[in-house]
Length: 115
Length: 114
Image (cartoon, rainbow over all chains, first blue to last red; front, side, top):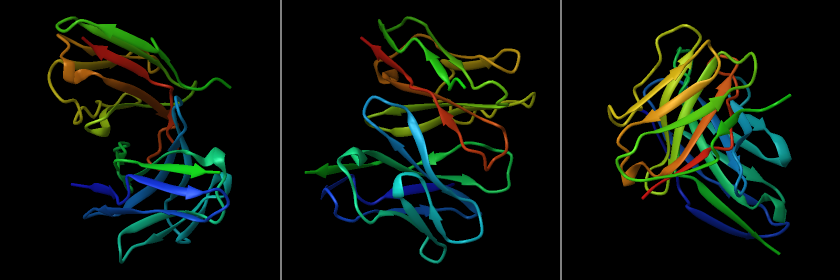
């Protein structure tokens, strides 16, 4: 079975400061990794994904994430946050190379950007 | 083009009633997913349709839950004899169909069971 753990339920940070949202996963098979963002009262939107190749992945809105296979982590980072980044962030995994499409999500991290 | 749409946006029902939730995927997307988002359980996979293949129903929590996809497009999630623990936001997503493809999510249906 696969699982995803997001280590922080809430992350408060001041505007223009850097931020890291942590994600660890557990799986006996290779996985694809995703970060989604959910703005208040909106649906989920893909930020970035790791399928293969370079372990540093860049996404939208200045976010990036690094896949670390030995530590089974996929932490999300942004060097300077804006008020508009306030949202809930979800890390997710999916079995690589199989026909199943289902995503297994972490519990989410609420990013609160303060002025 | 249009994104994934879901209806209704909100549904309030009484315990024991049946409800139907509708999802219209993005045109041309062969894969369709239902997820549930609740305070206690987070985001959970419910069911996955891919083309004409048998659906993956492994996430349905009980036999009160069922879903169908007609004509490879619109999908309906049905919950029979609703219980208070069914209260949640039900999200639908669609994708082109390959496992690595991005899933595009709809805005969800908020179900409240009184």
